[in-house]
Image (cartoon, rainbow, N blue to C red; front, side, top):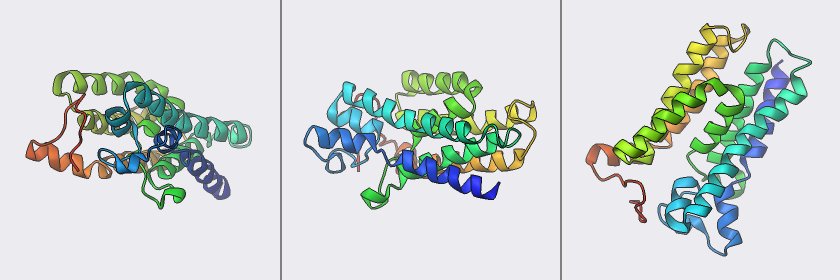
Length: 214
């Protein structure tokens, strides 16, 4: 199944290259990389181009994670019925890598949280409610998108382990599934390093602030 793993990552990466924020901004004749924080993801789009743009970018970045996982499932669920979940996980990882490090943008992409959420929806939908609650509470209580994003990463990984131990992710390659999902979540944390520093220094921007610290 080694070749299938590599193909799953490649499929995911190709989906991840649809950098919604960048393409939307180009459609309205601006370069989002020169606006706000310079990030091409949902939060910067929301702050610089408005709510409609933010919602569209979130959906676009999320659905590429969904579609990558679903396509790999369609291709391989009959051939590898016992190993399909690990291939789905690799597809999700590829989608996040494509979003975070898109070759057409010189490997300077987003933070991958919306794409991670899309991967989660297709790969482990049982984890979505808790992560949604964690994200929503962080927005309403702390008013920090970054805190919600970090909680989503942690919640996704923890629940993956819980559901895996309960047999909901199959019995094959569980340790590898944990490692791949863990890599996705660690990527999310790493991409939020600057946010973490601002949180610790008390300078992180809150929701609905139109300018973002560099």
